[in-house]
Image 1 (cartoon, rainbow, N blue to C red):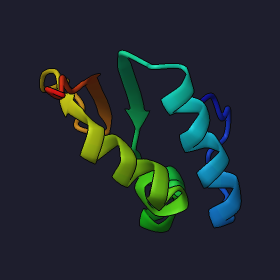
Image 2 (cartoon, helix red, strand yellow):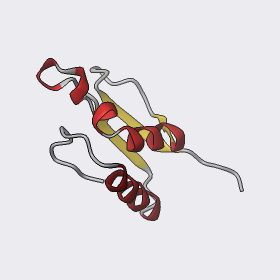
Image 3 (tube, rainbow, N blue to C red):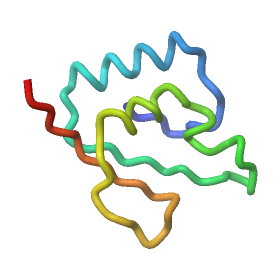
Image 4 (cartoon, one colour):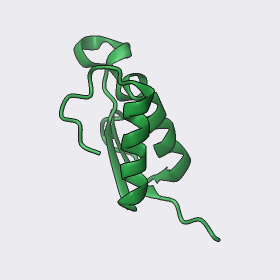
Length: 81
């Protein structure tokens, strides 16, 4: 998923389609910039795209701690079948 300006909350249907694209693409990594734009917490990615954010938390694991906690890097979890 690429959203240049993930500022505006999206409809559940939009987020669902993006999640399906992430699943279909079998992505190995996720990069999230979760910053309070203009100092507004409601404009963080986790608040504008809550379903996608939860999908990432459920299916990816943090790689490392970045110098700025707003820059989050995740790798896909390996699930045994």
